[in-house]
Structure formats: structure tokens, C-alpha cells
Length: 372
Image 1 (tube, helix red, strand yellow):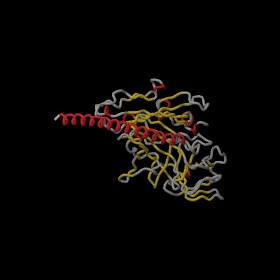
Image 2 (cartoon, helix red, strand yellow):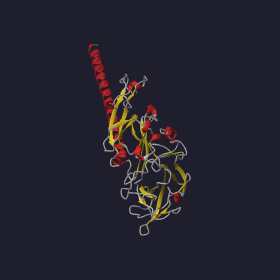
Image 3 (cartoon, rainbow, N blue to C red):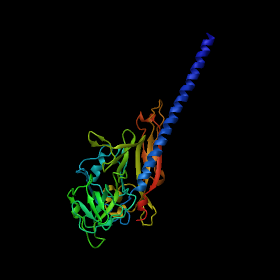
Image 4 (spheres, rainbow, N blue to C red):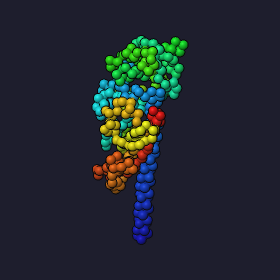
């Protein structure tokens, strides 16, 4: 009997040790998982933000803020004719379904937990990204440019002109005659008219400063597409992206849906770094409100003052722990002052207290905006 009792005590002690060890192992693993997921999410965001503005700021930033017009396979995608899918449905409402050309915009408090979203735009041609002036009047399916160096079949082309009342138009090349400087237009992103805006509205002018111009944004067929994406947090604790050009999204029931980027992201928040005196140095940090609200960033002068973005992620483990492990609020951007910091309470509910949270912050420059 004594031996049996001793054996039971030893077994209980061993079981307790194993239980404690297993619990700590699972906790450590879950925290490591959100650290890795957060690092990957920041890597993706860093890559997108640093490339924002490619092909649309080189040489001339005067068209920043123009209203985008585009169609794919005959269906209008700019301006939006319907709300974006979850978790970005509120964005279309804020913009009135109109999207303006800008390297980066912060749309505040449109996701779960009052998360912000980022709209990032840029080309991806890798060459010939300077805007090329028209050399003759366009036809409904043909452009004549001063030169076609850097243009090829399936390139997505952005048309702009000072007299077009703030309208930009996306189209697509089908064939390029380099000798004659002629680009024949056709393809998924070609439409002679979008939202009442016609290719033939973009006019040649002997004065290059007044002539319509064409910019190469990248090639869909060569897996080198333009970047026109929305990024933000959504349920269930995932960082999502949505391709506004409908070239990379999965489909469900023939509808475009957002794609997951990284898991364990409870919330994403952002602040602008603004250069107030055009010396290329961030002077102040600000929220996306007032003069920097999405609806206010409609002119080049306002948009080109944005030189960097500060991004903060709140990560949450997927492991439900037996005992409450989180009770306090989480703070982001604490060094920017009380008016700019984010104070979130992810553990406000009883269930939420059984998960662990981590924060990740990064300051990312908009490289293509530093010299304009």
C-alpha cells in the first residue's frame, strides 16, 4: 500500500510537470508564431509602401489626385460601381466609389477594431516609366507617341492630360510599332469609353506641357502587374489585400474577394509622415484627418507632402489559454504624443483575456515621393 501511494504521488508530480511543460511549450510556440506572422506582414507592407508611386511620380507629379477611370473585360472597375468586399466595404462609402491617383492613402477606422486601411498605387514596368507625350491625335483604339521605348504588348497604360478636369484613364496595349510610334489598343483593360471618359478626349498639343501623356504601369501577362491594392486587417484576425484592378484576387461565386496576407493580425493602424517645407525630411506626423483625410487629398500639393508612413500592428495568438493572461490596454505610437497614439483594448471581453498580444511598429519611407 505504501509503495502504491508513493507511486501515485510520483505519477501526479510527473503529470503536473508535463502539464506545465506542455502549456509553456504551446504558449511559447503561439507567441513565436505571431512574431513570425507580424514580421512577414511588415515585410509585405514595407515592400508595397517603398514601391508606392512607381511610374506615376517620375518627372511630373501634377496629375496626383486625378480621378481614376478603368474597366476590365468591359466592366467598370474605376470608379467602383459597388462596395469593396469585406473587410473593405466601408472604403467605397467613404470615397463615394471614386478613387484618386495617389501613391499611398490611409483610410481611418474602416476595419474591425477601428483598424485603418492603406490604399497603395504604383506602376511596375521597371523601365520607361517617364510619361511620354502624344505625337498626334489619338484614335479610339490607337495612340501615337513621341516614342514607344519601354512599351510592349499587354502593358497597362495610364493616360493623363492637364485639361481633362482631373480625369485619368487606364487602357492596355495590344501591339507596338516602334518605328511609327504607334500603340494599338486592345485587351482586358481596354475600353474606348469608361464612365463617360473617352480615349479620344486626350488630345495632342504641340506644347509638350499641355499635351496628353501616356505612362507604362506594368505588364499583366508577364506577371509584372501594376500595384493598385487595398490592405487592412479583417476577421478572423488576418491581414488582407484586395487588388483594385482585379488581376490577383481569388473569386467566390464569380465575385472578386480579398486575399489573405498574414494571420494573427488583430488590428493595423497608420500615421502620415509629412514634409511641411519641401526639404525631403519628415517634419510632423499626423492622422488621416483634417487636411489629410482621404476626401481632402485631391491635389498634388497636398499628396506630395507625404513622405513616409508609420504602421503599427497588434498581433494576437490563436491559442486559448486556460487562465486569463492579458488584462491591460495595448498602445501604439506612444512616442508620437497623446494625440497620435493608439490605445486599444483587445482584452476587453472575458474570452479575449485568454489570448496573448504583441505589437510591431515600422516607419517606412515612400521612396518615390522623396524627390518631388
